[in-house]
Image (cartoon, rainbow, N blue to C red):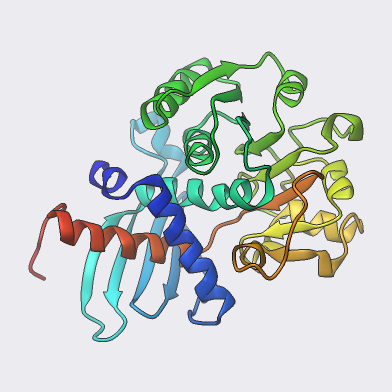
Length: 315
């Protein structure tokens, strides 16, 4: 895990995610639906993808009962095989890979949908993912201040430590409430497990700002309020699966807050096929995709080969 975080610079990880988005846009990849098994109190998820260089599967377990055992709730590995020969190339720590990959996928929304000079970002949810969203926002914009809102004091301290370690010279400011956060920054990233919107449904507070939802992952979860989607009138997503997987997209379509043809892949922006006005309200929903794991893992394995990181094993 520690090896993974040092293999590539943050901009290199963002570039790997952009390469994945382009491959998706050009049809140069295969991403079957992920499979999951509910078994003995755990959820086991298998997420396959294949591209020009390699094919891979991320296999992850989510075990809520691990917290009292002092074990991580989420565990897993990413296995990478050569697309040409089928020979296994590498096994990577899935938790560390997922953390940085998800940060980079969120950063696409910051890079392509916010004003270039943006100097601050707001993070709602100070868990592991909130920290990586802040770090990657700093990699694509000249961020000087991170405004943070979280519930647990212990996770907030860890958030500050992680952000300041990986984003030098950035000041973390704790907000008293969500209204203060909205008042102080124009970019808001939600990385929570909330099923209810984490911002007030008040257009006057939300207009002209940029919103990214990372946390919601079920149809029963909606992180951003209806007014965000009504104001934006369009919604970027990081994969087609988002259309039917998460409440933020499903509800926006069902309630006709956004027309179906105004929900589009972030790849449209990355590839220059579509433009967005950064002086207006924008919205972006990420649910992630095995394709992003694949491309970031490939870049990491190539970097490890150059630097001699990792351990060679004979199968």
